[in-house]
Length: 436
Image (tube, rainbow, N blue to C red; front, side, top):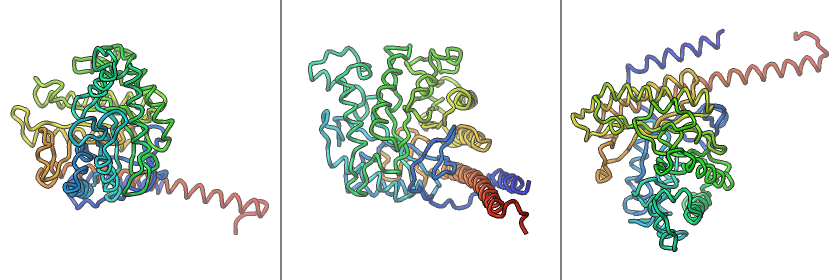
């Protein structure tokens, strides 16, 4: 009962922390791999919750050594707000500062930029989720892979051939192999052996509109997940899904924002090798003709449904891997964005506090001063966007406190088990004589 009272007291402290904003210290990311236990992340046996951000531009920027200080600045500012995970691109196909200039040919200067990103993340205690391809044309994506195959004599009718053509799939498997086996020229650690990397992501927001049954993507995910795991058993793997429901549970498709893009949140995430599920949330895009209250209502329903499915059907952790609100929306105000962030964070915190499946959230996107050219309306610069930055830091504190609570509870349990074992050993040695 005494230990329970301590835990309840700590929960009360968490609930009251909304009223003040103390300094947030940089976190120690630890040198252990993040693992999955049931519906939770664990690190070295303790619960792990991620408050983080998206920064797709990290490798691109770091590939120019004169701009690497911007990457360092971003990580430093993120760590000072308690942010612990960054999601970023480990691809750039054919274009400016390409990582892969043509199938199997890599730009060493750009790869060294990615080496720097991993090394700096480690320095600031930030874990990485690294995406391996893009559904969209930006930085190459599936369109570039299909074009490469066409230049090799393949007749391909659409970009969705990325998911079915054997030559294209071979190109992509080679990219997976190359990245996972990359020797980091700065840290001296091969990527697949580096705990700084938390997870691999197969593709940023995969969509296959040519097959709305979901079968094409299901087969592709199954094949690619097996390939990743054949190389790397250390790291977690996720798909990159936005969370749209499909035909495996048609009754849930009513939650989708009126379009079907060939994914199936439940069936896709039940594939062996997929360690945790992801969901994205952009109500300002998905239901753009609605007002702010309707958008908040949508995001709350969207998250509630996916949280329940992660707990009851998938029995896997769930991460909100992208969310945000654009300052280019008609009538935008910072207050509206802060409302959205607060609502999202409260959903995450509520699940975490009761031991639910949500393991964290990553806002889109973090920039730092000097990188305004990457702005897309959703950018947050922590040294400028003060009210939003305070909400971000507050969430870091709340999740950190929950980690401490569950860690304390685990320590108490281990201590009791150790005490009982010692007592049993003593009784055995003394043939059941009472202690004392």
